[in-house]
Image 1 (tube, rainbow, N blue to C red):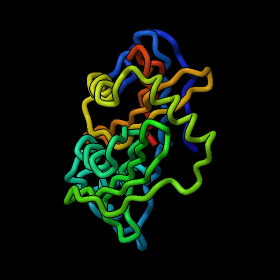
Image 2 (image 1 turned 135 degrees about the vertical axis):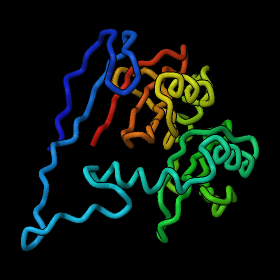
Image 3 (image 1 turned 180 degrees about the vertical axis):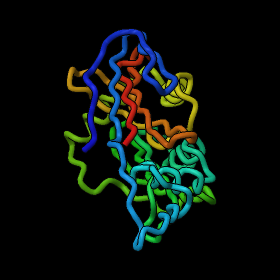
Length: 216
């Protein structure tokens, strides 16, 4: 079972290259693994793809992230170009049903109408685009309100996160925190250990509100 360290609000090294600077930092630690004996006492075979000692999530990141040849920024541009007048709401790197890497992008126009766009993470081409089916008038109003309040661009939020942790962005989205703050939540995967660090960057003043290192 993973153990999550208590929140701290102080300057300090989180063990993954970032420093607190007043932002809350949490760390999720993976449980120690025990070696599994092979039948007849033979040496255990290494895991496929060199994932021995990794958690399932780390192994999946190791397989998925390098397979994506198109970055989050290029995919975001492809999606906003596909829907004229739109802005990025969120973007996530996922696998298709066939196992290929693809970017799932949500964009919205000024009145809050959202569209879901899928971008091939190898070729960069848009494979599908459709309006959000479940949006009602209140949903559109809330989306439009968030976009109008966000004074910090997603590009600047990404730069802030990458300035703290060098890695690959796999997810970025505009969201509300429990205290009402509007943030850009940015996931950065470090390719030396395949951990994921999430930064909540204030969408109004650009400060880091929260930093969480996921070592699971």
